[in-house]
Amino acid sequence: MSGRIGTSKVGWLVAYAIAAAFNLIAVWFDAHPYDTISKALLMPLLVGYVWAALRHPFGPGDRLIVVALFFSWLGDLALEPSGDLWFYLGLGMFAIAQIGYLLAFNGVQGKRRPVRLWIAIPYVIWWITLVAVVAPKMGILTIAVAIYGALLLGMAATSWRVSVTSGFGGLFFALSDSLIALESLAKVLHLSHNGVLIMATYVFGQLFIVLGWSVPEESSAKAATTT
Image 1 (cartoon, rainbow, N blue to C red):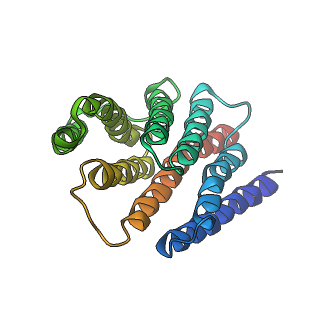
Image 2: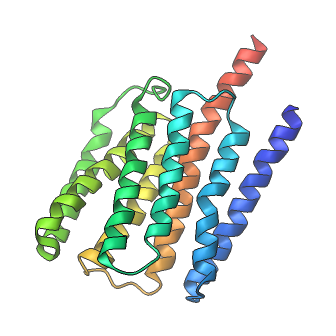
């Protein structure tokens, strides 16, 4: 049984890697609708990995990780159409995803490392800088961006509580959304193929968060089995 579970985990990761690579190529060449189709596959594939990797029944933190991935998927879909309404709908979906991650990282199941307040300092500076750059372009809507930024960077800061892998995942996720803000909202970033960089950091961010969450779970399971 454990061998089949291990094989299933690898299968989900391979499928995710293929979909991610296909998406990055499609974004690079602006190949629509292949970029949208491949993007829509990413989060469901990570949910499949979570289902195969974690012990059953799921703990409260595990369920929150799935909730975060589900709302990330809804956010991915909402950001595909153009227009402010779709953008802010996507922002709302991702805000719920960040709340899910925050609750998972800081709940009972997520308390795997002690809180180190010094880790939060660069993220607070990051948040202040991002809001200051976006504010002149957004007016009253800066409030919505500031709230989402606080959730995003709070998630990134506390992801280090889970593991180093999850910490880098939160960092990449925050970088991806910050690039979107600087390009689409503040309009101060004009990099060639910026969409590829946004998707690459997002793809690795979500993957590392999930991997970092699942590895301690597996380690605990092995320890319990050996004892």
